[in-house]
Length: 121
Length: 509
Image 1 (cartoon, chains in turn green, orange):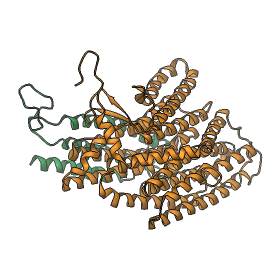
Image 2: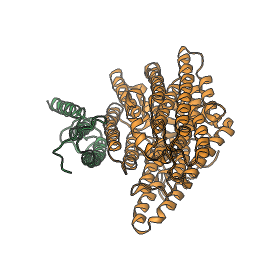
Image 3: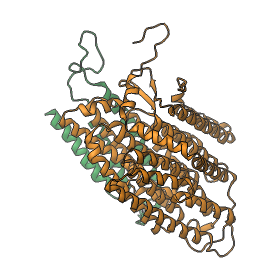
């Protein structure tokens, strides 16, 4: 059941992310990238297998095998991935904001000269 | 055998990284010191890279265990012939583009710090021995490249930059999926360990690992601008300032490097890769060449024209690399040549654009150049080099690739693509050059080429000439590199057998 929930959560995040990224507005694209990176982070975590109540750090008295512990490496990887995707989202947000003010609109198709009157200068 | 000083392997990453931090501090206090510091560090890294290449040339694979952990558990840096070749090439291109940025107006704040960051990312990507750190160094070099690209950008360039950032962020996500999938099935991320474990996987897991390999190839295809993934390149490179565009000449080569690393070092022992992966990449490479050649004829501006030349060379290199050891050797020689040529061309066409006032790099009537003779000759030499015509080193590279392509039926297609694209690129460059340099009216207003820009072009020209004069040794080195890549066991053996150093007073673990 947990596996099913986990997998479908990744699927839903990915689907929403891909759909948003394919839209021609920078705001939607940024949201899509964020959702996509959540899906990726969950996926990395799942690659260490889903376990219940298993510590990631060796404890005295317990046999040092993966049957008794959670795999710590994907957890380390996912931390790195979270930090990087967080920084990248911040960067792409500032970029989108700058582009919105300079181009007076957040359409991200390079050939469409869309202008939105409601954007403050 | 040349001895390798123990910690030298980490210096091509550490030096630029520390320099970047130092430059951020210096920027506030002594802004004038930035350029000299940056230049000294870049030159030092370039010299170091050549020293490392000399070590790699003795057929020794250098392995550096960071944190002194045994190979599959810790992080490793690996210096084989391919890594050393890329390091040396990066060093030359970096020094040239940094020279070209000297006294350049309109350069954003923190330029030098980002430049060093990019250098650290590039060197790290070439040296790292595992998939996840390849991802990390990709991000380091990409985030620096975003900043370098978008410093002074406005309007259209900003949108082009946005596309570049978004496609690379999606690439990063796919990279993470691929890396974790590989860890999920093989339990390791180390190139050498992966190469050993992948052939032993059960059928179902092997399928997943191949899926991960395909995802990785998609990511690297974005970087290398392989056909369905390369549409971002002309627009983005067209938006970059001159020294940045010159440095970006090495960026597509990172993708090519990673494709070679994955198809040879990691998946080299997998029949599926030899039977399906490499032919598919070969076809995509050829299609990229065709697309790039058409692009050179279609574009009406100089800078995108050079960007399409990047596409042609990228496709050609990937196609050649998949044709066998001899062709891969030729491709590696041509890789060095084309990177130097394209970097030089970016510097030259930007200098031309600077002298044409509002007309910039568009074809057709414009004000005459301030230095028509100098720029005309430079453009001619650059064009001959970039199109791979005789008598320059590009021709030698093409001959080596064609000779190496052998008797297979696919070789005929390769011959057609290489020769045809060379012809079309020559047409396009001749048309562009005559249109920009000869069709003039009115008064010239631009400023002459800066000293730094000349120095950058001169350095690349000297490097290209040396590549031509010492073509024998260079070709021997690149062929030896291809042979080393064709035996992934050498790489895996060197990495896995490296023993940690024992700390003083304790026994080895």
